[in-house]
Length: 73
Image 1: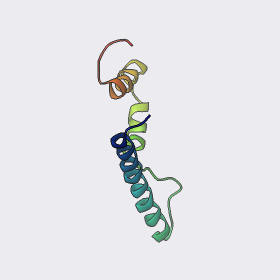
Image 2 (image 1 turned 180 degrees about the vertical axis):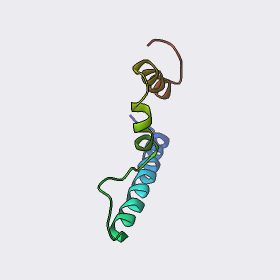
Image 3 (image 1 turned 180 degrees about the horizontal axis):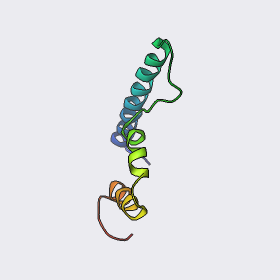
Image 4 (image 1 turned 60 degrees about the vertical axis):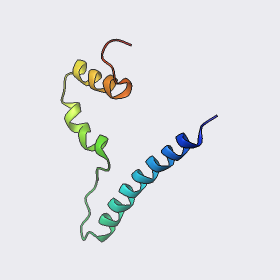
């Protein structure tokens, strides 16, 4: 059902995310006093900023990032 290229792309994506998580975990374990929370990835870093936006703009950003087109779906 899935092509090899698609499966390979998903594997690379998961590997990239897992490397970011592994690097963050190494930083946490090396810290003398680790923080309570850590942000890994661009989506978690942008979440507080997007949360301050009005609902219409926030929905526009989400729809555009998912479908790459403007307009109602």
